[in-house]
Image (cartoon, rainbow, N blue to C red; front, top):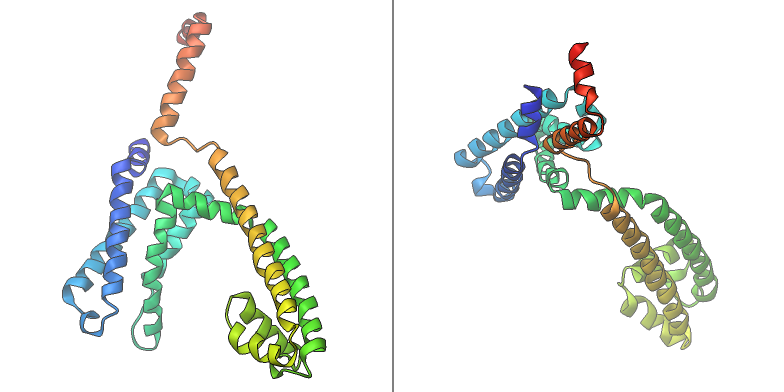
Length: 257
């Protein structure tokens, strides 16, 4: 029975059905944000049905894999999202209704391509952390330099706190006209310093982030995928047939014993 349950939950039709339910539920949750449709009986009933489907799916997977279910990080992810849907949302806990939107994140575990992207990002965390440290060092150098150079001429760089906020705005591409243009009126050469900061902090660091993430994505593409239950059964049967062909006496010995 467990083998049949495993074949069921890993069947393409079953997985496609779950993905469809997730998408429908995501649309319904978005529609319910309109005040006139928040308590629509049809949408409330649909939400209950979807939660029931998710619950049955989790129970089937628990039965199919047993304790092996808890060895997968994605299984824990799905389980916690379904459990969060049962938390009370009335009265003072009304804010917990927002947890329902977490069901949309189940697409990350249900769609293999999205799962590879997330796994790649997780794999790239050490490299991203190193680049983040490099960015922090560069930012600190420019923050101190801007405070010393431009503090007397612009209130945006009057102290370390304001310099941090100003440079962060420039880092995300905002504030050039309100920060650099007034400063340039006082110091005509200021734009060259800010251009150099923009090139180093934005283009160089951003390209490093992209390089690390791309490398992790490529490594995920070359990883061997885990076989499904049906595929594993076929591989086991092929291995058994190969063993019998290589050693014809093996089945006789096992039969006599």
